[in-house]
Image (cartoon, rainbow, N blue to C red):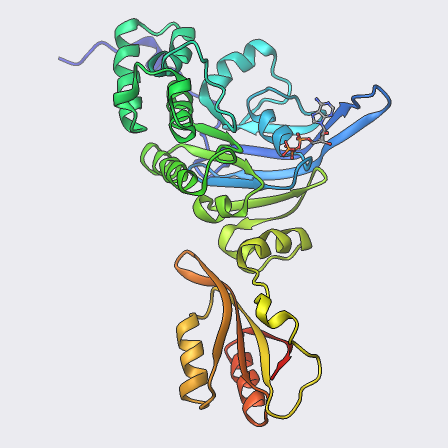
Length: 369
Ligand SMILES: Nc1ncnc2c1ncn2[C@@H]1O[C@H](COP(=O)(O)OP(=O)(O)OP(=O)(O)O)[C@@H](O)[C@H]1O
């Protein structure tokens, strides 16, 4: 026998079907002005921000101190309110949401912080349990969920410890477990690795990547460190003076930065200085028998090894590598190499021609004997 049909089954749903391709967060012409701290006038922290955060992506916002990063991220969980524009989360316009509306919305958004924000008087277990207690979750369910979360972040054996007994990386793992307790769809990361050493940073970023991939949680992070962007983000927005000056997929933005601010951030990881022993010896004018120092910039399209070996084997020129900083994004090299090659012709012209043919940027830095 068929199950009795509930009256609701005949009700036609007239609300528009959710668009699976729609961004999970959309900033549309968002502006935020604070009254200035001295009470005289106003500070425009954000102006005309247009930014989409695709569902399931990891999006990074990078900028220097005061650029507006914290303000931007704090809008997403209602800790700040926009003064103009519209903010949409999961298609819902949250711009005018009341505090009560935000209270339930915040459950769909976890957040982690630079200084972890753990309660020192609570154990690891109790810190992670806190959002569940606030939500009125039954005790047995809390026990089960917190145990699973501590497993996920690799802290099952630390459940009875207090924050003061943990390393920075372990504290951030507690922060991540706590942020995931309410099954958020979005995780906001506010400079989450800025207080950590490089190795711990890598392990936390790997955990965030795992959370994104395995749990399908969208991540919006803010940082002033380009390695963080390079390591885990799919997309990046560069913010300066409250405006987004460049935005796109990480590979394109990092390998072909269009804005000077982006270029400066990228240079910090790919730029290479002239070695100290050459600094005093480098000259503008070439003399007979000199070596020419070139900076070759790799933008991800050409592998470094074939380039160098091609110069040596096919053109018959000896290439000395003086310094280099080559990184990889999506398995493709990007960075720069300082090399020296003979100044005499036709070798130098052949080298520059070959590099040009490979669409590599080559700059003459100077000459050394
Ligand atoms: N509550 C506030 N009252 C007044 N001005 C503020 C307030 N919060 C931020 N600002 C100002 O807004 C601008 C953007 O600040 P915000 O903290 O968003 O930048 P940020 O990029 O996160 O900087 P940092 O990395 O130093 O935290 C700055 O000029 C800042 O001084």
